[in-house]
Image 1 (cartoon, helix red, strand yellow):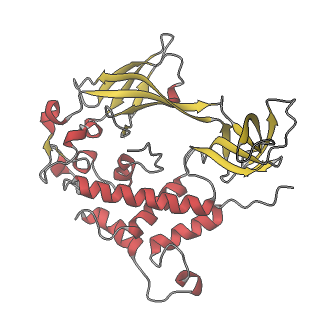
Image 2 (tube, helix red, strand yellow):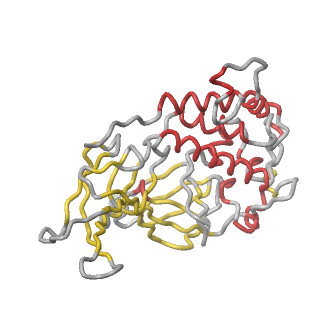
Length: 332
């Protein structure tokens, strides 16, 4: 399981379609009947929505030429010209992703809902700290944080619905009983720092002069000249090197920050258009799926040729990408 960087995580999707998190994440809560959308979801339903959201995000990002959330791009190879233009726009920093375990198996306190975990962040920036189900890359998103103060200790608040243990993700159709949190709730979380490491930025590649098939690698420092359009310059760390590099491999962090409401709505609408069927029978949520999967009887030439499809959700997503896509001239 690889670490994902979703623009619209599942808890955010539930909020956008007006679904209570208890039912969405498979819990049978006493207050579920108070909500119009209260049918308990199963894991296959959540998997289908998650797949559609990530697929929609990938299609939108491919057209925009920048990612909707910051992501690391590794070993992106280009001819060793200077300046050099990156494949993805909105460059934020040069470097590689560092994924460091701050503390594994931090106990979760279920004294109240939301639950809490207390973590000593050390020297890590709070915005780089993430919580995961133990031994997995399944991120658990908190709703709040207090601290860290001068001691570096922070307390995170997490709704019970987001703390279903890995082995209990496949809930029965009636859902896990909310009061049985000691059974289905994860006992601990892994705390990791996912941050930028600037020690590796660029790698220059040269053909070995005296060898047959070998090559020479040397490090290069990158400087961001125009982060919005991805224009970088580089300098060799070995200034006395005499050989001329042919290629440069770039390592950098890039993406939209913060995610706009329009971008979030676009991912959701395209995801709805891509789903083979509605995951649940809630009338309130189904109105959104019907809106995005509706195909009008009369279509324009542009609509017929829309790469995302003919439905209203697909068409609106395509219009967004065309208005927000990155347009760049040549780098001389």
